[in-house]
Amino acid sequence: MTVSRTITAFLALALLTGVASAQLELQLKAGEPLRGLTPAQLAAFSLGKAQFNRTFTEAEGLGPIFNQNSCASCHNNPVGGSGTILVTRFGLLDPESGAFDPLTSLGGSLRQDQAISIACQETIPPIANTVANRVTNSILGAGLVEAILDSDIVGNANNPPAGVNGEVHMVPMLEDPAAGLRPGRFGWKAQVATVLTFSGDAALNEMGITNRLVGQENAPNGDVALLAQCDTVPDPEDTVIAGTGLEFIDHITNFQRFLSPPPQTPKSGMTGETIFNTIGCADCHRPSYTTSNDPAVEAALRNKTIRPYSDYLLHDMGSAADFIEQGAGGTQELRTPALWGVRFRDPLWHDGRVTGPTLNARITGPGGVIEQHNAFANSAAPAAQAFLALTAADQQHVLNFLDSLGKREFDGDGDGDVDYLDLQAFLAAQTPSGSGTYTPDDPEAVFDIDADGDVDNADFNFLVQAYEEDCNANGQNDLHDILVAGTSTDVNGNYIPDECEFCQPDLGAQFGSPTMMICGDDLAQAGSTAACIIDNASPNAVISVVISTTNNPLTILPGAVVIPGLPWGSIVTVTADANGRFVQQLFGGDISVATFFVQAGYPLGAGAELTNALQVTIGQ
Image 1 (tube, rainbow, N blue to C red):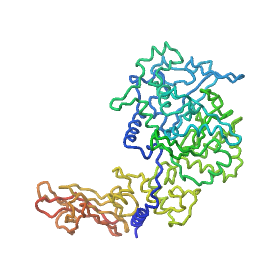
Image 2: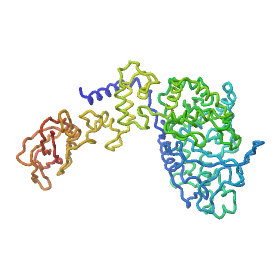
Image 3: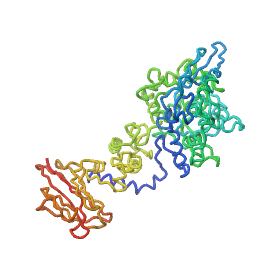
Image 4: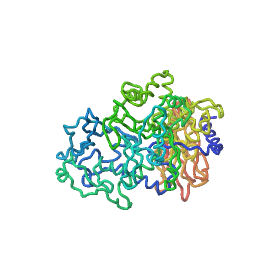
């Protein structure tokens, strides 16, 4: 049995056993919309994504001082995720009392790095003695985080693990100040409670777009006279976008709220997570929550179990802090960052100080995350020291677990996509169904979507869904074309549609709708194979195929030219299927090179149709 037939049979069995795995679903790729959105919500997501990618101009209200001209400039890994762009915070810190002055009258604590004119450019005031960078946070899964019950975040603070002291940052909602304070959960200081507040605040402070939530421009370094000179667009600059009924901040809120969270593969059972919990990492990086079951929350966000790995509280970071006060967030406090998606975040830490070529380097290398956690007076130091006391093998278990946070199912090489190399790795990892060969700690667990210990036909069914190679650019992945739709052949069994490989030269001369191609291997050696495909014929049509060793075009009807020259060495009659298609496998030979000219057509007469002609070379 050929490999191609083996795979076809493998898939057929997977489809037959699909009932057993019907409750399983592929985890979504980071940046995709949540599963379960209504058509209207999907449309809102798409409109929001377009606005999130929108580049603002001065005429549209950009500035006069700003950091970037689009949301996606900062949130770009993927769109909506984290980024590498830094912004600057500054202030005046009294070294004796610890009192912090954000120097609001001088444009603090956020410095806008760019301006629409040099005259408006902000600088860091000489009086400032504290300057800190902030790197872009991820907003993947933001709607799910927003849907975490306030009581759960408050409960994290009121019922802490032994030795842990985290504080809730209670903040107002810009969209409803009268509603009182809610636990913050977004931003490095947990200074934002809702996605809409974040949208309004970021639109102003990062792009200079005034809106219904924050309608007053930032004056360059607090100079109101300079603002009057530089600000040329009436406020608020965010107005209803034509044809949508919504403003810019509403659109980007929809996009962020409906973003799926990063995947986690394996989903559970890794030894590293057990150790992570045991040494105290999970005391702050709380693994899971169940979102609100309030009927007012969209079904796609309601009553969902999520695994962000954060308590959303402020903790004392000691000497590794930013020393910037923001609201009730103290100078040494930072919110526990969510760890989902950490494997593809670079740089790490609030100011981007942690970089490295690999996640392992970013975690354990010089200046890495463990070293930062172990900084002087950092409340996370006991957990960092417990990690350092582990054996090398157990440390690697923890690192492997962290590497699972953001890893896609079937992404065997960990490069973020599911492609031909991953397919080959999957095939190498195949085991008999029910073998129980693999554990969640094995690299092959990335292929074991149903977590039953084997890599078998049930898993392969999901691989066909996750696969991303689309060599013929028809909008369906190649495995789907070959194994599900049957629109592509793979006679040489290498899982690449034949039409994407070597195709014998096309000489043209098509007359009518049918086409012919011979593609796959180049037929240059024994054992090579290619598919001869006649397509677009009438259903069940009887087709003549003529073969000649010469090329001598002959016009048989006006515009109808037969390329193979007389005498024809062979005439073969074949019959198309009900879809007007005929497929025949051809084999290369260990012979001297021979070249033939081939063309097919309906029997001559009224309504005759001819395929294009091919020049076919066989042998070596």
